Image 1: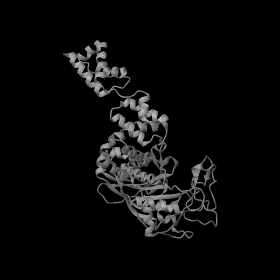
Image 2: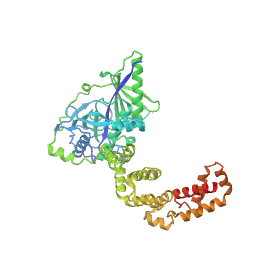
Image 3: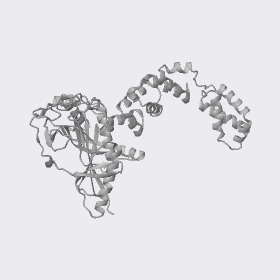
Image 4: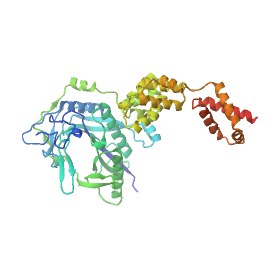
Length: 491
């Protein structure tokens, strides 16, 4: 059987967070509209004679994304009409950009490892996916299909939409997933898109072909439309790769077409033959002048760039001694990374200890409560003091969880809570030794079994010490004294 190499390019459609739509003053917050077809006007419903005006904020956000993706901004760029007829396009065309988009020729480093070990190796050996273009367009209306009819809601029509088109530089579903994940993270770090794929504000389209391994040939590709989750993206690409391989192996020919993804059946389905650029009959938008940018304007946008996820990951690894997986977890949300840095700065404990608390107890609380890190009322300084109290063995790890939950429930100072609840850890060896001796004297049968070889009873003895001290005994001291006392009885 011939060995094949997948060739994958992605188109990412991201709605931009602006107050108004791309070419009119209607609210872009269609999710909060009280009724269908209420955030509308003659422009976004395509009424004759209505003239569009470009949204300045949307243009600025588009340029910000392009710079974050290492693109070159075109100082002169134009809008175009993309002509095709569909019920969700009231004008019969979409205002987009074609020959002169806002930005071109960017890149993003991608790590294609699919397991933890492979991901670590991939982190050390990144590959680069080129970004062909970034362009501005308008979103379409929403269609609701019933049995014998369809309904259309124009509240979404005209919302600013950014399309990010990659070159076909990815060669596995894992690489495509990593690229898509990184683009989503950048959009969220910039605050230009919520990344909420369930609500359709971020959608993927995958162009997939396969070729004999080692070949530079670009074979016929198919385009899988409207993938709205990472799971759908990877499953659809993996299925399409296998489908095309089977076609070639059986002597058939892959047809260039647009495909849908049936998530329930786990298969791609044909929608229509793939259109080429000439099918859309692009021509310059006559109602919108070209956008002209100065060097000063471009630099003013560049100055707004925050530290991006990739750079923050590298810094967390070098500055805090975190592993790549630990760093990537923390930078997955900008607010989470910021909270970690504030706690780490306030704590005397190692940064990896802070990470363990955030990845463990804090994330458990957020998941159980349905809250986000932005909703946290626990100050980084108070959290840091609690972590330090555990590191310094002022309280046990179990007592620390009690204090943590109390701080989340009612606030308060960790030291005061420890004092009020009498949770200070017992570390005095003489005090613990007396408790150990009493437990061993009260349980001669268990001591005999332990000395006869049933050493798993050590955990039972540890439990008795914890019970006698209400969990306040230093477990390391207690274990050391227990082993020593039991061994002395062996003699």
